[in-house]
Amino acid sequence: MTNERCKQTYYGAVDVYTQQCLIQPTEKGNSEGTIAFLKYLLTQYPNSRIALIWDGATYHRSQAVKEYLESVNQGRDESNWKITCMRFAPNDPKQNPIEDIWLQAKRFIREYYHLCQSFNAVKFLFEFMTHRQTFNFPKLFSYGCFS
Image 1 (cartoon, rainbow, N blue to C red):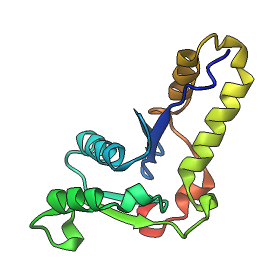
Image 2 (image 1 turned 90 degrees about the horizontal axis):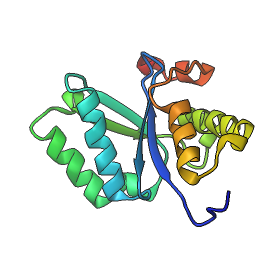
Image 3 (image 1 turned 120 degrees about the vertical axis):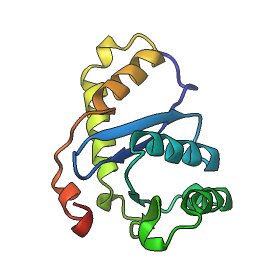
Image 4 (image 1 turned 45 degrees about the vertical axis):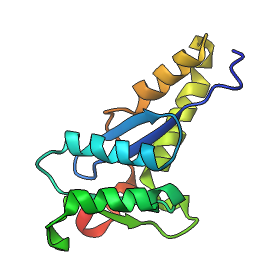
């Protein structure tokens, strides 16, 4: 396969109650993609409050994302926010359960690379391996009241 210039960025989250992974493809990691993913999560959990624990990517804490979160949480006490965002410790991907899922999906693709005749096939396998799949990593159960 010769698609060296093709790439795909994914946003992902794991529901600590169900251990189900939700992913969403986006053109690249930026404020617009982050906001689109937050909107997607709201459609998936319309009657729930969402707590996100994520890494320190600059676009996760951009002004546009802050403004979007303010608009979603407007008029609510902090204890009742629709979306609450917290960050993992800086530079420690070992804390982040989604990193384990990305690694498992990459291993799967490496194992079945012979089926990949195109970049679209690679994306299909990645999404097949991750989206709406259930994962049971010990790390998922280490987040106190969120687990």
